[in-house]
Image (cartoon, rainbow, N blue to C red):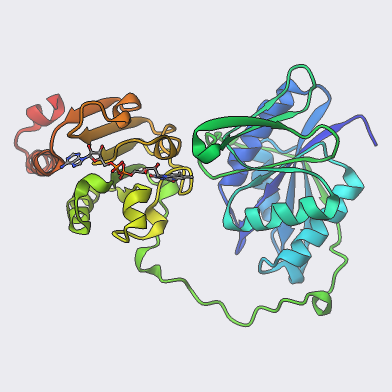
Length: 344
Ligand SMILES: Cc1cc2nc3c(=O)[nH]c(=O)nc-3n(C[C@H](O)[C@H](O)[C@H](O)COP(=O)(O)OP(=O)(O)OC[C@H]3O[C@@H](n4cnc5c(N)ncnc54)[C@H](O)[C@@H]3O)c2cc1C
């Protein structure tokens, strides 16, 4: 083993487009590297005809990208991806390996960890270097989100962790960046892959929305009283150029699609503006919204926990507050009442 401590980040891509969580992880890897003497930040990229993505990775701080470019990797399948990555892990012995906790990343990271016989801390909310042991300290919620546990992988390498999109801040890319491209071969042919892709069937696109990267989210909870309440939220979201989100309670009640769920078992969000209407602010919900720039909470209970994370709170009935908010925004757009809205 060399003395260089490699901090690897999976550059996840689909149809030739990198998932932004890859850049969030490269940002985290650079912060870890600053605390870990002798370490370097490197990317791992797999796919078919995806070499151009390496240039992007350099701009986000990777000094080197390990590339396995092979037609077998055109569409994600667990076996060839895990096989290819496990081989280069054994060859280059990274110290730390970070993967996005996306659908693909969750599936892949656990398979890699199994193949190279190491530990994996899933869904981390914080990554640091333990100041005494100089190893990865991966923090994640436990006991239903009521406690945070910091997990160390003392004996096995690499130390693996997954982090959900938007849990970490997005770094700004450098205007230019250069790095070294290391080409590796897959060593697996199509005949050796048991799973075949016959057809791609799009999921019901009717209620699929990318809330993780939305700038404005208007979220509703059980305080809406009935699923029809979401119409009001949709109207406000549309006026603000945002999307509708939800607490788990209303997803479980079948009022709205699970793709809208925010929190520990839903999505983590970082909008510029988060409006929470009729959401109590349970810890499992709050952990998903604390990266928001500005939180406006509307709740008729002055003691609701949501107010503890809100920048601005309105104690009142959401069915009185939201229509007024909508009316004022409309009035402002129409050129009236701008002063009052700005004041509000
Ligand atoms: C392991 C685990 C994981 C979980 N994961 C998640 C998760 O990912 N996301 C999540 O959200 N939850 C999650 N939960 C559930 C969480 O604990 C709460 O039960 C849930 O967030 C509550 O949803 P709510 O705020 O909509 O409902 P409630 O807690 O019932 O709150 C409704 C709020 O609306 C207010 N209200 C009522 N009427 C009005 C009105 N007319 N105007 C204004 N306000 C009104 C009430 O005062 C109350 O504060 C999880 C729980 C566990 C155990």
